Amino acid sequence: MTIADQVTGTPIAGAKPVDAKPVDAKPVDARPRAAAPAISLPAIGERELRLDLFRGLALWLIFIDHLPPSLLTWFTIRNYGFSDATEIFIFISGYTAAFVYGRAMLESGVLIATARILRRVWQIYVAHVFLFTIFLAEISYVATSFENPLYTEEMGIMDFLKQPDVTIVQALLLRFRPVNMDVLPLYIVLMLALPLILWSMKWKPDLTLALSAGLYALTWEYDLYFSAYPNGFWAFNPLAWQLLFVFGAWCALGGARRMSRILASPVTMWIAIAYVVAAFYVTLTWYVPQLSHLMPKRLEQWMYPIDKTDLDVLRFTHFLALAALTVRFLPRDWPGLKSPWLRPLILCGSHSLEIFCLGVFLAFAGHFILAEISGGAAMHAVISLSGILIMWGVAWVISWYKRVADKSGAKTKNAVGNADLAGGG
Image (cartoon, rainbow, N blue to C red; front, side, top):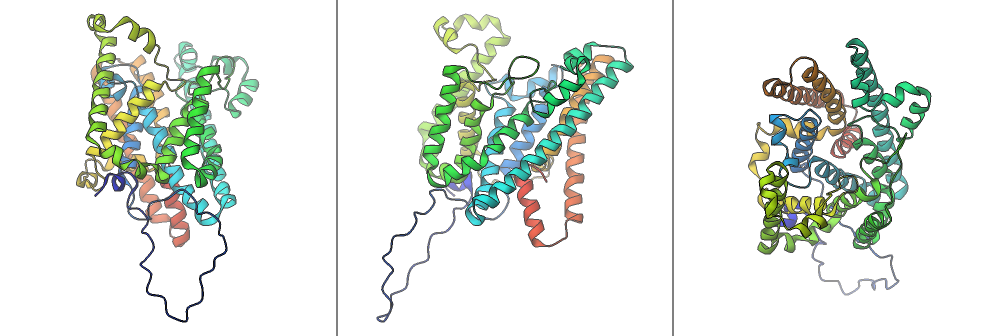
């Protein structure tokens, strides 16, 4: 199996060999035809479990990172390099969205694919509004019941309590978001841009990626951003994070296969390893100040701050290095993907929208328990493991329900399966 097969699955087979033409065959039509689309998609087959595995892992890591720091938070990847679970989530979202809706665009046309994408955007938006409502109710209830106004300030809802009418309108416009609710608005904006991305990639995928990189560079050069309410800017700037989303789409639509020789090269492997090790050493200096004197001052001045809001290039390249190593050492047909030990991660990853919303709710509940009852390492471990078990249980129930309830024909089943691959039902 080649690296290309590992990344994108088995490519669509080429044309069958042409038999010898009979003597009385009609002449071939010499009229010019429209150019074939430049993108290519893997054949429909077995589900790509690696995507679900790492998306599920990202959801678990995001949940743990949203809890107060403790012993278990040292097991998340943000402590060992520049990137974290957010990069994994956005890249896989771009990959799966392009795979599902790129196929729809090739088979059904731009209009139908756009309609399906907008339907998906509406589902995500409704989930965000629902989560916003539940999250506000949860924080307000806890703050009132325990007479602790610090919860409202710490969770960023003080402005809502002062001007609820204005704040609700701003929340519906995605400009006001409490703490830990920044990923879904970013995903909504990126999905809104997906029809244009796919239409452009249909003909010029490499040019589309280059234009995305150009927008990323302009964002840094001219400090472009989305404003937030009541002041400030989005925690994840869509103008910068679109690069990772578009790169994921580019990989899904044939880019990964075209990079197969680069990914298979030992040079690429050793460069990726060296970068990951260097990033680990840099992050180690954040926690062990005695090591910081070994860092050249000029390097520190150039490197810091490593900005998450605008997807610092060091974060982006760190993710690329991790992705290159993952593709190389975790093949698509790895037997471990069928292991029952990884089944909980894969289940959560296959229903990422629902599990992400649940994780945000559980993170605040865990934060409240740790603040009011006990903040020790043992309690933190219990809260973290309990939250992960709840997320797994809900994912299992959703999966079970869809297996039992969705029996309205093969067409509906295929639509449900595609929605699952794109991040939820």
